[in-house]
Length: 573
Image (cartoon, rainbow, N blue to C red):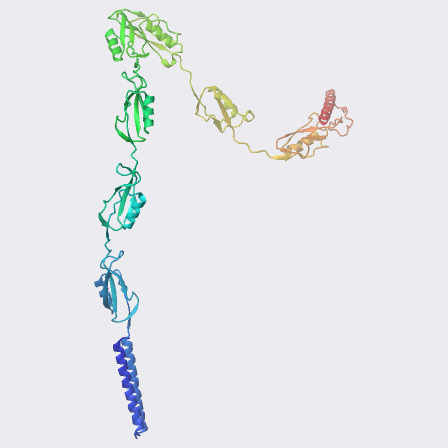
């Protein structure tokens, strides 16, 4: 509450007290006013007091109105003043200070702070930024000759930042002491400036010796002794003996750091004669042959007729010889004719030599030069000019590879013939020969050598179900066979005596086997043969039987005896 509000309140209270005093005085003086007048006077007095109290309360409320202080930080002073006036407040004292974070001319802080409640018309003080404070200037210390620790301390004491660099070679100061600094001593710089410096290395440079003309072993040792490395290259030379240094990559007398690599070029001695291929000058005239040989770096001599053509040469065309080699040529007159030799049956290579001896050429497949020729053109005995090229014919070459035929979908048995016809071997599961193949290995179309093995592949079979062998003892063979057949098994029993009772089986009853397994019936000792006629229990043939039937019964008896013996043997086994 301000002082104006307090004065107003005191005045209202004084007025009210005066009115009350007047009323009391009237009562004490014995005023004869009627009770109505007294009541009226009392009411009037009360009303006046009430009005005075109400006026005092209203004046007090009006004089203490509160407003919210706005946020003025980061505003310019004029904008802050405008915002204060709009809120019913006034701009108070304005102070200025440096700030690293608030731009120059903007409010850094305010008092009272934003959102505080203040009386209308109250003043708000501001602190305005002058921007960053300019750093102090300091002199760069002299670091030359200090060790790294002392140099870093001198820099730090000056309010600067030291940045050590890589050591450098220097002949001015002792190794380990500062020999360079990035800013000269005494220079005025901002506080916090970085000063780079480097310490001195030992001067490790050496002078490269003169190694030309020295043996490589001695030259390399000299470099090693000086702390230098070496590399070696070689070249032919007519001036330097083999193993002698002809040149060096770093000249004599140049100073280089230890560890520098010096390349030594070492002589291989005189270069060997260059190898060249003798050109084919068959059928050439002497002039043309001479030009071709000289262009290849070869010399020549000749025999025969000078105006003829070359019919022989030594070394032969295609031979690799030293440059400058002399090639002997034999020439024959153009007007002469030559009789074509019979070269059929000769190998291509031998036929070529035969033709060359006669001054003829031969065209044939050199890749089949060891194969006998089966024909020639022209025929043997034909007269031709020297240099004529005879054509030889070789047999058709054997195929080097064979494509695997496509037999997928064929049965194994059918595929066998197709594979064999292609000159290949075939491997497959003959027990499944009637089944169709699903693939081959190698696959169809693969190129393989003749005679290679091809494997036929069938689809995978499902695993067979298992069955437990029942107890067949005491059952007739034919009945036991039927019982096993229903289970997917096969009984090996005496079919000539199907009524013989089975004693046991192999495998034994209760054994679990795969479906389709063959089970062997085992019989006891001598058993009466039952021909199936219950009325004729003695086993003799009835009167209607033929002699042949009797023989059959006899044979059956013999077979039964044999079966019994076998069973006994098995049992003994």
